[in-house]
Length: 365
Image (tube, helix red, strand yellow):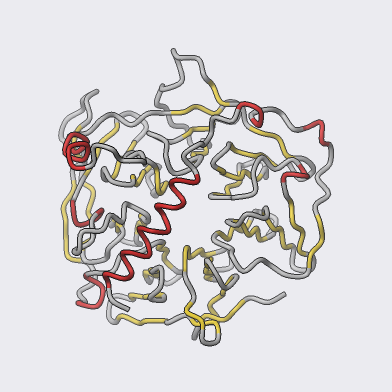
């Protein structure tokens, strides 16, 4: 399949998602404590949905599967339980799963964040007081959320309250607005959130580059090729990863980025201080953009495309893993490494896959 067709598919799919999630995070009727629903029993089911975009493993080794319109699945190695809004989950489309230090599980949705304490779901309350709602802070135990695709910044949860933060405007915004005067989506929309080994928070946006927050200052970088494909399609910053040597990789592996100390401290938005170096040298990858990336226990870089399989770079060679479900081309969304080092794939149309050391195979209960 040509890059042009890949680009059209990706832009079309996320255009639909963006439209769907435009009315996000503002549904006051659902922004309530749902504890009155009592214990969340869930429903024991025999199989996963075909659309499972996300995989997450908690500290008790349960695997959670989300990213469809049916709810979220919990698998303890024996039983598969489906939780829905009937159990108190705020919304069935899950776009992120995290765990806090106390073992509570959080589900990021376009309509809010649900917390599961092992027995019941509650909905996090958003702080709306104007004097503190955009106060950027960062503590080691904070959790960060997107709440959809169309907000102008992330949400930070400090263990008690959920704060909506706004990105400082950057210099590319004016150019974007002049080219897209009637854009139906937010160019600052958060596509990806990543925490590096130094505790810096990275935020990939739909059209306006990458923001980095180090706990004191917000900095920003924009390279046109990271957001826009060679044929003009807008891909956005959908994946960020730090490798074993401390380099940051963003969307496309042609380059990697060495982040340098800030030269000056300023309250104003300033460029990230970085050095760009060549990454994976391969003509096959120069025009590919990755939905998701991770590193395995050996430090190899794994990269997931939408409809061109998985690519692995071990520093010496590049290995391609086409993913097929019979004759059907599997449409990928994410790659995840669990605590045992197992690699999982989330897909749009073929359930979940795991890596067996040689190839990816469909996960069956």
